[in-house]
Length: 203
Image 1 (cartoon, rainbow, N blue to C red):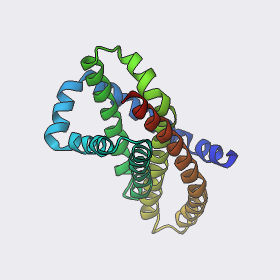
Image 2 (cartoon, rainbow, N blue to C red; image 1 turned 180 degrees about the horizontal axis):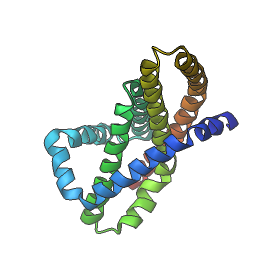
Image 3 (cartoon, rainbow, N blue to C red; image 1 turned 180 degrees about the vertical axis):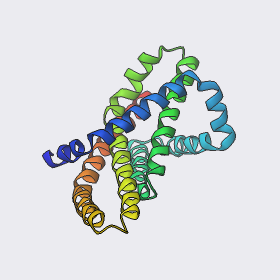
Image 4 (cartoon, rainbow, N blue to C red; image 1 turned 90 degrees about the horizontal axis):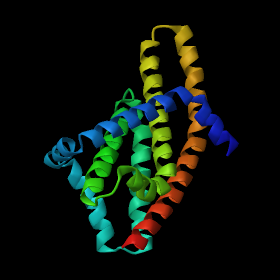
């Protein structure tokens, strides 16, 4: 547990940047939920979100609901870390997309259900999001760090001093990944259990 928090603290600036990016685009998605929601439907993005809901509706039992949510989130987190090697573009876009999606969902559902957005967030999102959202942000932060290391290593090819510096940075980064990923998996597993239990309860 301590090693996990040490790993997070070592990337506190990147974590803070990802968290800020997520919050900003959540607000954008909420304020402009109608046009952004329409854009998501036109581009097929919303369809992917609906497929997850349909998979749960086909078998709304706790085990299936948990499996769909957990493995979907796990693949997303793993992708944010691994695909970050392409200069951090994928995790950055992932944070932006997830922020927009959350904002659109809160804006749309609060209007349709005649609920105050804060009430919706506190009762339906916060119980599992308090673990799920930080886990996604941590994964994105380490994915973006991977991209920064990849870009820096390329620019340092011509310099023995930079190669040595980035070689040390790579070793430090790779030593943290198993601890970080294990922590993210645990957070997502608990979050999925809470979310799936709430879904089964409300249905």
